[in-house]
Image (tube, rainbow, N blue to C red; front, side, top):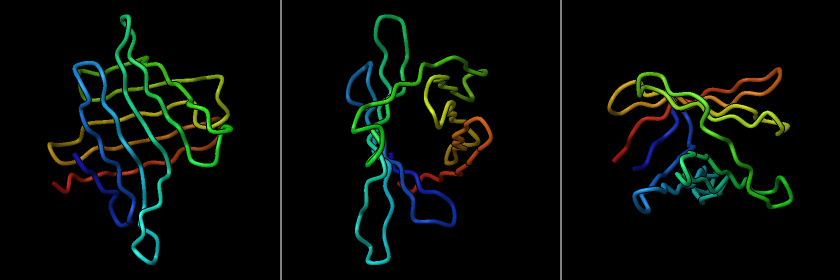
Length: 120
């Protein structure tokens, strides 16, 4: 599944690796239409816990940062948290419609939201 941020060239692609793992990539197209990777992401279920993992290009010394699933709301949203991380502390995905997701990344005094639209 490929999703695109509204009014921008930011994309997030997800693929189901197996019954317990989704892997993804977040990237944008620069002014030359070259793909520039922002982060490698995954959602993994293991030992009764669901974790969102992010490896952000040029941050955290190349280490993966984990966010534990802390809340679901009637299967319409997933909220992942890591209170120890500097930014973000919360990543949420909210189902808006079959073709639209709202993604929010939040920290102590900052929140950024993206509307992703399915493009295939």
